[in-house]
Length: 394
Image (cartoon, rainbow, N blue to C red; front, side):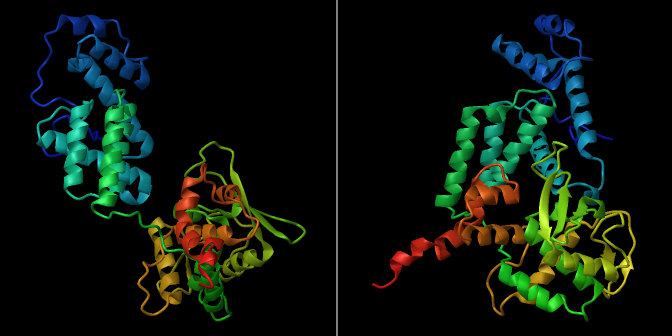
């Protein structure tokens, strides 16, 4: 596989400094000669580059070190599946590769030092360039993240860790908000009232296989606060049905925030599991079978299509869009549901439930801190909490 450090346009390694020639500094040779590049780690190499810089020596002019950077990046790209098709890549990987390629191409086209390793001045120029193009504050953060990740994986000092870069990003984000009114837009919430309406529309005996599947997906999404990709990866083997008829435990082996190998678990009451059972029965399967829970269906929505692969995240998004089309009020100016809508709606409903603490919502949504809970529930906090009561009677 061709490394992303090589631009397709001219086959020029993008980590080389433009117009850079082989070094003539004997001090570089003296340092490199003592390094075993077969055993060096990315963090060790980054520290070596940093310490050499402090002595006024640029060892990145060494061919051996540039080859080491290439090896680290090639290994990283292999690990994340950079050569796989878009459908096989997660949204995170696609975003990472896209943002990095934009930075690498900009460095090459503007004949500036970088992208691996990129000096702080190059990163500053690039972030300002992106800001002036009108990119959102979220896009600027994604740029910063991609530059950081590739430097760490390539064994280069991370320029984004410098306070100067952090301060610049913070300033640009503030400017986007206060000058350009770039406010973060969260997904439209799918609240419990919407789920009840979907049960009425898609839960009847005349509903199609697709409607039964879509309803099971929406119910699980709301009750578990799973993300779109996590919904698609649910397997029948992940369910453990309780013998007392109370419901089932759903194991979540891997999530966006948990790669520890110790799975998370959520409980689904029997009333909600009935939607799963009805879908499986219509699909000719049972909870005791194996394979992915949510399967493909024919265009008319009445017959299953047997595949070994999980549903795509786009199919999950399309299901949320159908839920929106089925339940939205005519003339609504809200954005249609996205794959995060059930997660947002469940968090908001929990926030309004008496006795439920923010820590409980964090646990339900598998968040490590309060920030996302507060972000998801900010609108409901503003409109429906007790603080509004002081506005009554005057």
